[in-house]
Image 1 (cartoon, rainbow, N blue to C red):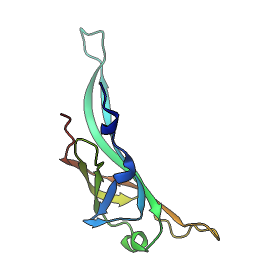
Image 2: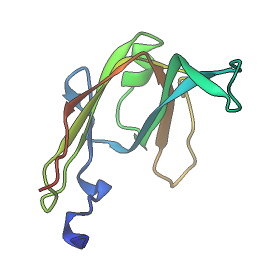
Image 3: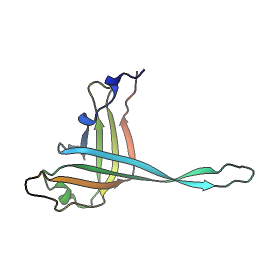
Image 4: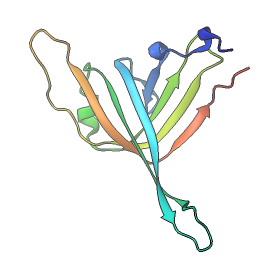
Length: 135
């Protein structure tokens, strides 16, 4: 039976860009899609699939505190996503390799409101650095 205390909360997530903790980031999403080539083979009544190219994409968002993303421009960087919860079976770190912004937010503000910054990006590989393993 599931021990509810082991469910991981995003509250303890951290994002590092090129090794520097981004304390202002409060949301990070990244996923990989794969192209599947659909094949029709003789003698089979099922279509089969061959793996094709992969595409990594994601979005990070949080509060605007520096001009770092503007200064970086469209240069590539690595992101390490760390998901940690004191009650979980451990922590998970995933390295996103060769991230590059799709767009850079130059201005997005309203009087009396916190300035939020969102950066969609693509990446060219990943590495599961620390997996979470249940007991």
